[in-house]
Length: 288
Image (tube, rainbow, N blue to C red; front, side, top):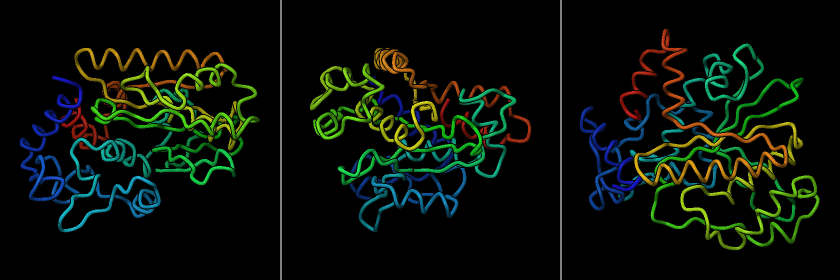
């Protein structure tokens, strides 16, 4: 069983255990892998701010009608798992989440906001700015201003090929690359096509680094890759690709690291179960 089928099978089993009705991508057509109501795919309904932010993103996650399911209704949706794990903390102690993600020390209390689908401009020469799935903002007086979070779920194991880095990111901008020569050399190997990475989408991460770096400076951010591990070769390859990218980023002193959803959920369960029982039980039942 490949990684995508592994994830989908787990999610179909979750839906069956919890009597969650599923429909197809075209309601009456397609594999039954979409909830007939978005709230059924979420631990908690979208907060108004979260809904607005996702609607402003470029993914069209909430667009659905009587004949088509919204992307976020998919039980294997990366947007849904991201919201299920992260949104809960918007009205809780955000530094606890930042610590569990490995972004700061346990006694650090600077994290104070969580947002979704934030865009960080790379250059005025580009029409579109890349969306990062989530960002935790810290107090203004902190050296590190933001923790960017790129969330990956089933799409990392999809049969669809991911895109390389468009050549214009190498030819149309020069200033942003001056202090990250190793990432520049790496970027050239995945432009215009990425023929080396099967599960990680490094072009996306490079663009996030360029955008965050322009906004906060090279030392003003951390970038986290939050991913779902799977059994077998797909999971091993994915982890190896993450480690390879991390080594390149480290050479340029870019603060990049990763954590799997499974590692995060276990950390939350060990350190913050009391007072968050329903939330952590939901994550455990659905994603572990």
